[in-house]
Amino acid sequence: MDTHLFQAFIPAAYTPDNPRPPPRWTAEQAHRTVVFLAQFLQNQRGSTPDLAWWELPQALPARTRYDSLAYERKRRAGDLAEWHGMLLERLADYDAADRLTRLAAHSALAGAESLLFQARPAWRDGEADRARALVGEALTELPGHQELHTFAAEIGAPLTVRAQEAAGRLSR
Image (cartoon, rainbow, N blue to C red; front, side):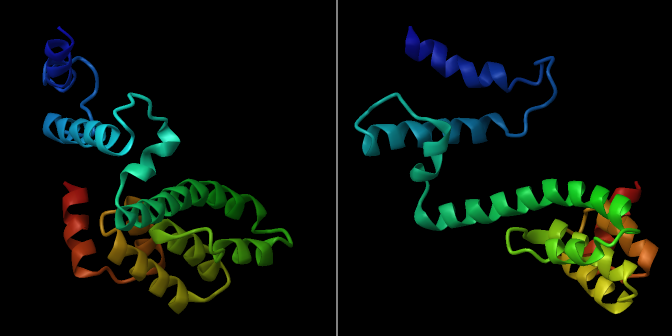
């Protein structure tokens, strides 16, 4: 009975008839992930059914763990960049500009969002070439990022070929 219910769970959760918003993954991806975790629990954890969310990185190969750390830094950078953008707007006229510039270059941030955050004070401080270069580098990483496209247009930064293609898709 348990096996039957479990085998029906993923197809039911990932059916197109589900009234909820569409899931981020396909039913096939969800199935592969569940099988992977079940094999990990059986082979590496002595068949225990217990797995806490913070133990998930242990299930990944070392190379993937490194990649997941890089992904986490990029995600965190995106969240922080939004917050920092508000700081830039509100504190730019105060004596905090030097601290915002240091914050933008902090090693805890990574990825395109961090580059965008660094580009904004560079532009504000009259470093147009540096701001354009940072936006270009960010668009290389995330060619379809709408906020990057908007800022690139605002400062006259050239778009990479991939960013131009993404701009065409975004305008449709």
